Image (cartoon, rainbow, N blue to C red; front, side, top):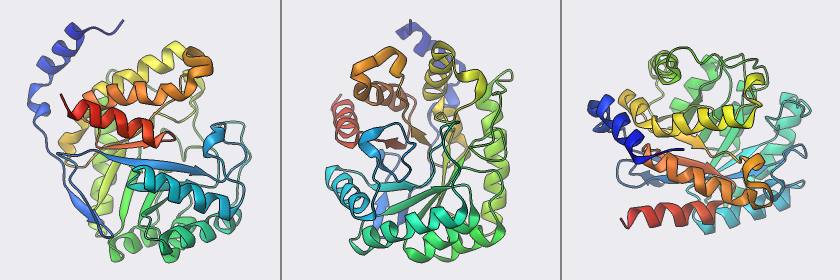
Amino acid sequence: MLKIEQLAELVERNRPAIQARVREFSIGDKFFAFNSRPAIMGVVNLSPDSWYRESVCLSADRAIQRGNVLSAQGADIVDIGAESTLAQASLASATDQMKKLMPVVSGLSAGKVLVSIETYESAVALAGLEAGARVINFTGMKPSEAMLAEIAAREAALIICYVQGENVRAVGDFDFGKDPVAMMEEFFAGMIERATRLGVDRIILDPGLGFYYRNLQDSVVRIRHQMNIFLNTFRLRRLGCPICHALPHAFEFFGEEVRCAEPFFAVLASLGKTDLFRTHEVPRIKAVIETLAAF
C-alpha cells in the first residue's frame, strides 16, 4: 500500500532533483510551458490489433474525426500509430504504416491539429514530417541521422523512448538493475547527446512504461514498476527535458472500470512531475490535471 511516509522518504532521498526545471519550447504555433502547465497527448490507433477499442479507427475519415475530437477535448498533441505494441500484434511494414498514416496526418495537420507519429521506422517518420507531423514519437533504439536532421530542420520535436531492445516490438525481459531510473537516465543522456549534435533542440523523454516486456506480464510486478517510475519521474527531469508518460490500464485490477485506470495513474504521474500525459482518455485526464492544479 502506497503511503504518504513513502512519498516523504522519496523526496528526502532526492531533494536536489525536486527543483529541476525542464526546457520549454514551441511546437508549431503552440507554446508548451511545461514547468507550470502539464500537456496532454491524445491517442489514435490505426491498427485493428490495439486492444483499447475506443482509440481504434479503421478508416482515415474516422481517424481524422477522432483526432479533431481529441483536440477539442483538450489534447495539445494527437499521437497516431499504425502498428500496435502488443506482443501478439501483426507487424506492419514501413510501406503499410505510411499508407495508413499519411492521409490522417495530412488531414489533421490541415485542420491545425498538432500531430505526432509513433513509429520505430525512420522512413515512416520522414514521410510523416513531410505530410505535416510536428512530433516524432520514436519507439526504437536507432533513429537515423537523416531523420534527426529533418526533425531539426523543420523545428519539430522528438520523443525519445526508453526501450531495452532494438525497438518496442523486439523486447525480452526487462532488466531492472539496482535502480531502473538511473539506467534510464544514462540511456537518455546518450540519446540526447546524439540528437542535439544533429540539431534537434525540442526533446521529450518517455520511460516506456507501456511496452510489453516478457517478465512484466504479472500484473502486480508490472504495476509496482510503473508506480515506482511515475513517482520517480522528477529525477529524470534533471536532464533538462520534459518527461512524457503513456498512462497504463491495469485491467486486471480495474476490470469493467478499466477506463478509470488512466486517470488513477495520472495522479501518480502528476505527483512525480510528469510534463506530458499520453492517454486514450483525454477529458478524464484533463479533469484530473485541473483538479490537482486547484490544490
